[in-house]
Every structure is written in C-alpha cells, then in structure tokens.
Image (cartoon, rainbow, N blue to C red):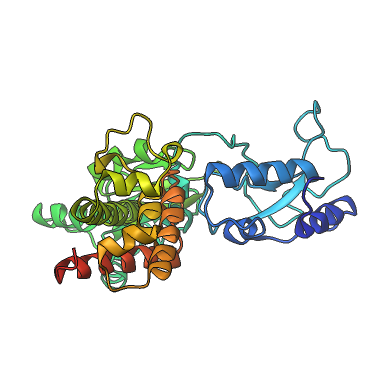
Length: 353
C-alpha cells in the first residue's frame, strides 16, 4: 500500500475476525486523513485508502451531515455482487449501524444533498394528534419553534401544527382543544434530495420534513435553517472578497507594473496579463507583498514576514473554500478570515493605504 493508516488496518482486522468495528462521527473519520472538509481532493484520498484496505463506510460518508455516526464493512471484491465479500464480515445491524441504509453514493456526485444540513439529521420534536393545543403551544414557545410535526410513530406523520395553522383556525372560530383540529398537511422530501429541490418546498411552507430510506422521519429543515446554511456558506466568500478588495487597493495605490513583475515571474502571472491589478490572483498578491523592495514602498509599519505568513494562510483557506463544498470551514479558519479582514479595514480606516 502506498500509505499506511493504522485505524483502517485495525478496522479491517476486526472485520475479518468477525468483531464489530467502532461507530464514530464522519468528522472524526476524516481527521484520520488530515481532512476537515469533503473537498474533491480529500475525498479522492479517502476513497483510495478505503479501496486499498477493501472496506467501506456504512452508511456512505458522502452526502450526509458531517457529524453523522458511521461504521464499517468489508467492500465487495472487484466484480462481485454487492453483498459478496472476500471475507466474512458483520452485517450493518451487527456492527451497530442500526437502521442506517447502505446507500452507495458516487464520490463524484455533484448534488448538494439536504442530508448535509445538520437539522436534517436531528429527529424532530413532535406531538400526538390527541395532544392538547396547550401542550403544542407550550412546546413551540419554550423551544422557539414555528411548527411541530404531528406524529404517531417515527414513521407515521399525520400533519404539522404551526402558528399559521393555529391562527387561521382561531380566526375561523375553531372549537377543538386537541392538536389534530389545528394541523395542516405535512410536507416532506427524501434525505437524498438536493438542497435546491428542497428550497421551493421550504420557501412555500417554511419547513420540510426529511424522510430517510428506512422511512423514518430523521429531521426537519426550516427556512431559518436554510438561512443559517447559506450564511455559513457565504460568509467565507464575502470575507475573502473583502480581503482581496483591500489587497487590490493597497497594490494599486502604492505599486506599479514594474513592482509587480519584479516580484512575480511571468509563469506566476495570469495568462495574457495586461498589467491590471484586478487580474492578479491571491497568490500573486502574497508574492508581491513578500518582496522586500515592494514592502518598503508600501510603507506599512508592520513586520513583513509575519504579515505575509497570515496572507499565505488566508490563501490556503481560499483554495479550500473555492471547492464549493457545503461542509463548513473550521472555526479557526473562519476566525482567521475575520481577523485579517478586520485588520485591513482598520489599516485603511486610519489612512495606512
């Protein structure tokens, strides 16, 4: 094998000897490979390692929330039917995967699945049809919910009660005292649906229930959850855009084309570079500012090495973010982006450039 992973070796050994492998969150699993997000490059590394050891995750670690628990089983031998293995291995139930389905998702599946949102993987609080309206209202107020599924079991949905459904019926002088008199039809999607397929349902009804392949309701995604998801996804892009705009202003105001070309050999500049600062890449800016003569011309009363080290770290984060993976970046990386954006804003605010 080109690279050894002790954790995978131990798991394969357990499977071959008939022992149940551990269950652990996807996030922990990815840390074995030094990965925080399921970017294309990270997934390629993980897939290669799993293939080398002849094992796979149950359920597939792709396209589900990053903190979902997974376990492992031996993968089918090449050419064998799915379910045939070289060695005897415990079934999904025996390994503690419970009702989790063994869905096969391609590592190059381009869709952003609703199952990658955290709330799509938290079984919702629900009430019975014969629960009192007072009980439902109390739960919604205490937990700051706008709606509650009305369910008899974790698979059987009777409807959804919400502030809207309650208000409409009270306006119509409804007399019932239990939940079923105030509920509306429930709206749901499969966990395999894309985020974008779910958006219309959520925008029309403020929520959607998520049903797993085993027919259980495993989550509820609300318009608030979608707002948080897009905030989480867009914030790094906005901060990176802010930092790059500051860099353009700094270089455009203090340096000329000769300064740029002195720091960046032609092979590092964009193809057909015309000399416009707007054409430069983030990596170009790091090289330009790290050049000693250019740094002197910038007249920033800061340490060049420390400053450029932070910019290089931001460039690495940028390369990761631009993979457009819905997995959130780490809190540390987000803090670095905020700090550097704040630093540039402060410098520009006091007239440093």
